[in-house]
Length: 115
Length: 112
View 1 (cartoon, each protein chain N blue to C red):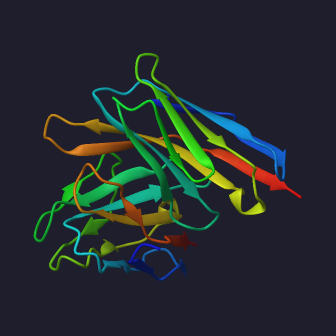
View 2 (cartoon, rainbow over the protein chains, first blue to last red; view 1 turned 135 degrees about the horizontal axis):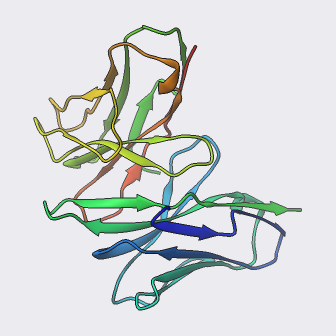
């Protein structure tokens, strides 16, 4: 079972609509949580990074929330554009006992914005 | 746009060939990483480096090897490619563990 679960697996929305993607994680000890956007055939690009003390962080039309108690995060996209079509990956950062900070990746939500 | 580059972008080779995937960054980052990603699946860390002459294995076992002779360069080598090595390989770098990782565009490897 993956330690970072995302839902839905895929989503189709009309251009201009809003959507919310979900992430549940079980990894610990938790250092920070990141949302990445990955276009097909490209490397992931960071959208937000939140520590356990942060509840929300925005980056333009993207707003991420974090509830460290329930170990849930969401990414809200406002007024979607065709260019938002991509995979959105939730990534939890874990501190190993060596001090190395390891990233645990979810499988992503594939979003398609339709005209 | 991050200054991290990977070549080749696509590679199709026959079984048994030796290959090297190149990764370079011009941001002066000490930390560099190699990930493997199969279609529709999550990224898995296969190698990382804290700096020059430092290399460590990640949590996904890989037959590949890496080297870090220069800060900006972190190549990955497969001595004898097999069809099971077919995947996308992503290189990343970061200034330290707490900041975001900047990813390259990836190399899509197909071994016939």
